[in-house]
Length: 105
Image 1 (cartoon, rainbow, N blue to C red):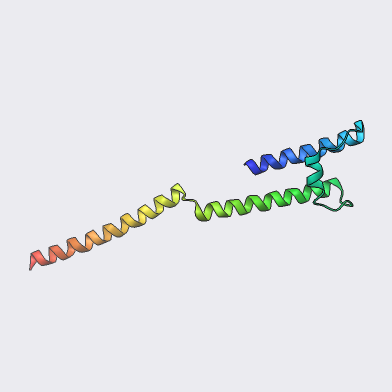
Image 2: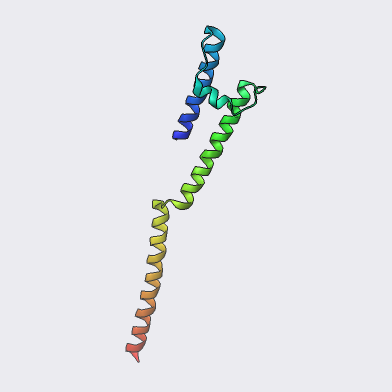
């Protein structure tokens, strides 16, 4: 969620920076220049924004994959507890069956 917000802020800042340069003749924002310096000068603005989007989506997918792999999820815990409960019930059934067999002899 935060990554998406950062992307939107960066995209808006790039558009505002270009508008300020073109219309008002102001100096460019140093943070925007740092982002734009990562790309060749001959790239158009929409290409830079598209590549930044792809990068943010890549980061987002990596973060989601890590969180799904290493973070304990409540539903995953329920499944694990359910499996343990089922195993314990099978063991209890086996013990009860063996006790009933020993008692009936």
